[in-house]
Image (cartoon, rainbow, N blue to C red; front, side, top):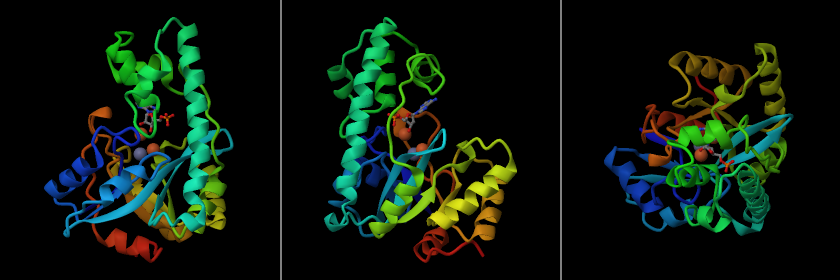
Length: 276
Ligand code: AMP
Ligand code: FE
Ligand code: FE
Ligand code: ZN
């Protein structure tokens, strides 16, 4: 069993990297990819102590722009060779995020939600994100749950939503490739295509852009969804990935190793091989 989609407290998960590694061992994972949002630092920390029985894969989840949508792109096998410039490129996304956070605090303040940037940054580590804002809003009694924080204030259609600059999807695919990595389209079910024609056209153009894989297994995707993504992967020649999108206590309902993903998918991913 493997899990190729997890977050630590370096982005918006609740577990420290060593705790996540321990948990991976406890649930019997053979391979674990840490895919923090826009940073490799959680992986770096975890890499210092990995038990022999576990393969730790350097990964990332990048928030990218495509037309009017924000699309999450996973990257794997990013050895982090400083020569590729990948880490320097990530710094730009960190500045965009920091700038968004300043505006988000201002926006919340104008709505009568009194929080300060230093308070929210105290909850985040490398990456302060909306889940940290949500936790602060709960702690200060403005909302009862993190979900309510998103539906009332922070979500894409909520009152305080502030757009963040970000790299284009194709640029991110190319950056991952240039860094010697493999890219995978995260939780494709969340991309709201108006119809199947648009989805097929999109996948065809992403294949041409150099996308390597799609995430066929994810807790938001039903068994029928997964079967469909496997079929689409065969049709376009994509490898497939899968994972739990584990965020610990920062996102209810995610459990490490759920859904179950077999080791054979990792072997295929390495070879950039589509499902048989
Ligand atoms: P950010 O990168 O700071 O914009 O925060 C994005 C993160 O917020 C996502 O990766 C999710 O973990 C979380 N998130 C986004 N929308 C929602 C939502 N509607 N409910 C709960 N969590 C959300
Ligand atoms: Fe997240
Ligand atoms: Fe995501
Ligand atoms: Zn994720």
